[in-house]
Length: 68
Image 1: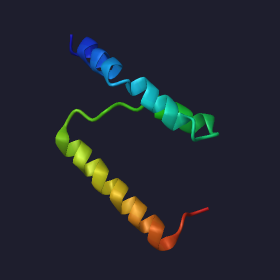
Image 2 (image 1 turned 60 degrees about the vertical axis):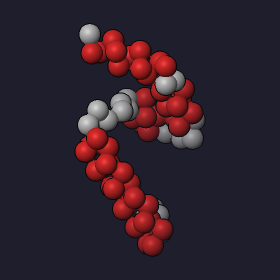
Image 3 (image 1 turned 120 degrees about the horizontal axis):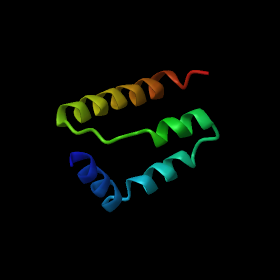
């Protein structure tokens, strides 16, 4: 039952459209597949940890430049 509730929430929030739009910014099929496989966090602590990691990565990238 929880799975059907998640699917309904995803539909209401148009999560599939968000992922499709995000995927449109890449030419890599591997990255597009990783985007398609994304699922929202269900635990607040996990979401907060991921936000801290993203903030740190952006900060490092701005300081040092993009690798590659």
